[in-house]
Amino acid sequence: MPPIDPPAASPWVVAPTEERNPDTVGIDLAGTLDVLRMINDEDAKVAGAVRAVLPALAEAVDLATEALRAGHRVHYFGAGTSGRIALMDAAELIPTYGTDPSQVVAHHAGGTEAVGRPIENLEDDEASGAADAAGLRPGDVAVGLTASGRTPYVIGALRAARARDARTILISANPAASFGAEVDVHAGVATGPEVVAGSTRMKAGTAQKMLLNAFSTALMIRTGRTFSNLMVAVGARNAKLRGRVVRILVEATGLDPRVCAEAAERAGGDGRVALVSLLAEIPVDAARRALAESGGAVRQALALAGRRS
Image 1 (spheres, rainbow, N blue to C red):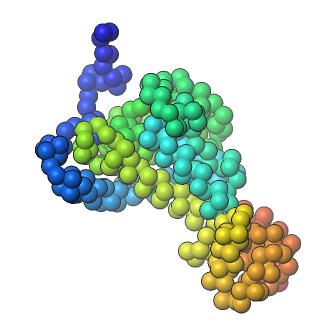
Image 2 (cartoon, rainbow, N blue to C red):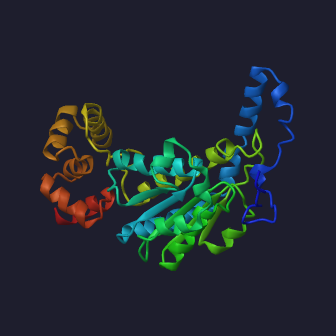
Image 3 (spheres, rainbow, N blue to C red):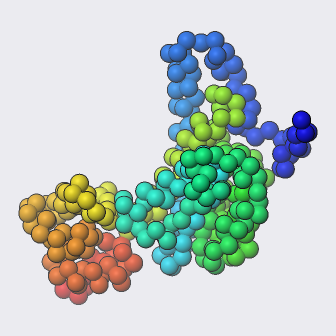
């Protein structure tokens, strides 16, 4: 058997998620309910740990908001659990907030082939991360997700992004990760040892999902893709979503459902166009122009429409 090389970032430095959890050392001797209680006790610690890094996350949101408003893009980079979380978050923005698929792009070490069938050694390839970041342009934002804070694929991607004058953000479960000093913002959440040592799909993964969901949701809100707490940019691509658009319009305007359904039809299913048309009492073409001038932000489009009417 060949010798095992120590991790590239060591000598044998143990990340917090790799340490043994003193509260779960007897978990394999416990009954099923007690196993689940131990897991749940550890899960309960995640929300508080996430709250502690919200100031850093707010900085990250502001960077990304500025980038999208200027026509730049946001890119996620991750391997394993982190990469799968990134892919899911980016994909869900398209139907929920009507984003163009090119605005928020996720990169997973090994590509889509590695999503359902893990290819573990790819996360150790810094050059692969750099290659995946080759398409970034100045002003873009790169968000790296890694539980340890030192995954070579992610480091390679963020270093390459920085070399292209993109802004860089690291989301990790290792507040002391040395690479955090190389990025613009490091949201290092202290989730601590996992229930099963090193199983970062647990608390670290939960924290990364919470942070990324909060990041992208706040980004959508800050770029005007909601009205109040309504997701008015949802795409009406099937019967369920068409009905949702009408319900959202009713909530936002207080108008009769039939009036809202007719407005949605005239707007081609575009909830934002229908909403601006209804609230500003202008034709859908004028509403569409106002939204184009406002970068898709509903309240700014309403302000533009109000000045013209």
